[in-house]
Length: 134
Image (cartoon, rainbow, N blue to C red; front, side, top):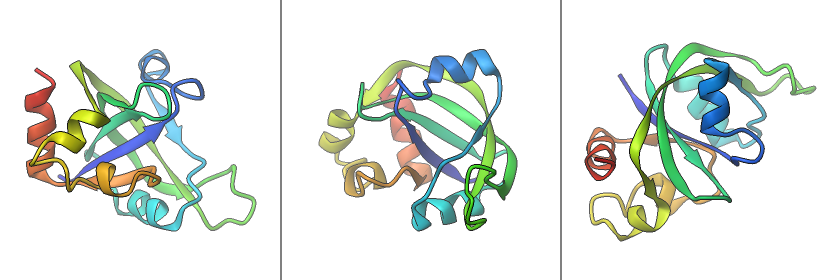
């Protein structure tokens, strides 16, 4: 299994909305690096849900429910989307400030590539975030 982090502005689509919806298509990604990360996802992979712009924190864990398929909102036909479903909320959200200050996490893509909306997470980073969320 691989691990990921996916960002959404909570005023556009929040963790609470995903929980209510039970499943959603993660669409609208137009950065090629982020799109390649979507293409690399496999069904059953897990991803952190990160609230960007407002909150700036990892708030939940999702599972990839459907692998990459064409993003209907992309008129060029170049980009893809995946389906995700919520697994659980983090008991204590992990802030960007905490990530940047932590010696294990400071090299995490979230801290190094702030504009990247879909990024890989190493197993070590995944475990550390879960530890901090307790």
